[in-house]
Length: 347
Image 1 (cartoon, rainbow, N blue to C red):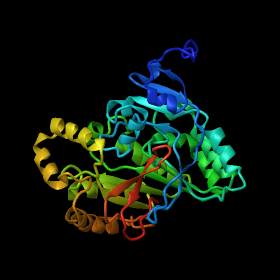
Image 2: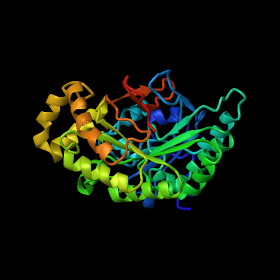
Image 3: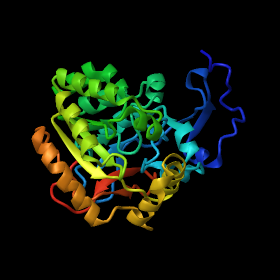
Image 4: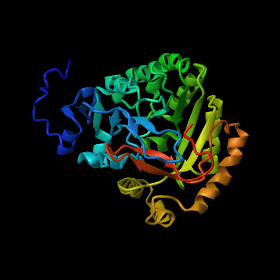
């Protein structure tokens, strides 16, 4: 193993916040150029969310913190600041790996007090980002949930989910399993610029088809819709047609929100790649994290006929407002939560 020579007690230069997270060691490998993995031993796997009537779940599991997908707009970026890491490049390249998460989860699910409530995976950072190929944490998590009769959902951009389709198919015979794929950008050049670490749109469309071919329904998160870049009729029509052709059971659509330090990170990218749009963004968002209600209504009127045309209503819902976040007070986990509106669900 390339990592065997790295002593656990070596001075790895990790920041103090990682010590609080239960740091064991920090490692690098040529297979993941530019990325540092910070292996930690977590004390808890289940995160209980604050009481929110709009949430379709109260518990989440996140095997990683930080995400090599490097999406410019990612709402989870500020969670890295809890670890004394920055929400920009550190979030993309300093990945915290909870190496014992499956074992801890199994223990928690075995408690008499566990009521087998729905557990959501992929609410903070992607469970099938590249690190999962190295650490293989998801199979253990899936088995623990299924064997404890706990229903769960997965949301991902990662095509690595294909590896676990046989396991997910078996799990779905034991408990309710919901799978969602996030695909908001149809143009591969724009996708590469905004989401540089993610699989291509075509690869994710192929993933949707693989999921449905395995007999599992797949909802698609067409989110976030990025103002002036992905909100044209041409873009949305082409995207939804492709999603329908891939066999998706439905879509969920909502506009981009830019909260906290994510806003500055995205605006820096925008000023470099699309400087002509900076003024429009300042007018649209102002000092707020969300687009105004007028834009949301306009987007709904544009999207709804396309959803109907391609039969993508299904069990999905159009978010009549953008997302906000809920921060779990003890561990700083961040998930998308709808503002009050009709039947707000992720799946």
